[in-house]
Length: 154
Image (cartoon, rainbow, N blue to C red):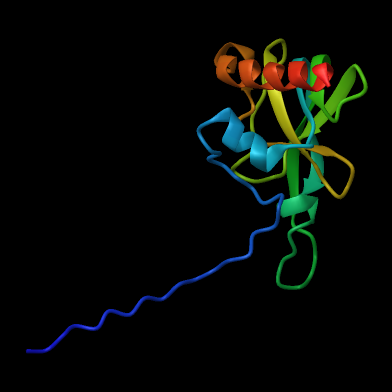
């Protein structure tokens, strides 16, 4: 009688801390574990324009082509009037940019959002997964507000 040998190949891939996550964890607390310390706020989109940029990868680094040049792209730049800041926002008007990837969130002027952003190496706030219209963010708002309340109690 022969015994079967099973071999496993394990592949480990290093992912930068700010790598794109198009499909974030389903719970606010699991997302917070990844996103903690990054710009997070409630605001209304007050203006929008398309601007020239370069495709950004994890951490806001430009994505380079085979010749070493940054890949040009146009992205959405949205200015928000911040109404409630959870982390990383100290001004009333906040500019948020796309990253030039399929993960970019597309905003509409006049809509209130819960914005999760990443602060890129270029100093710009870029859109992040779980960003959503305020009407779809009740679970996240409840979680974030509970953290804010606990932080004030210390």
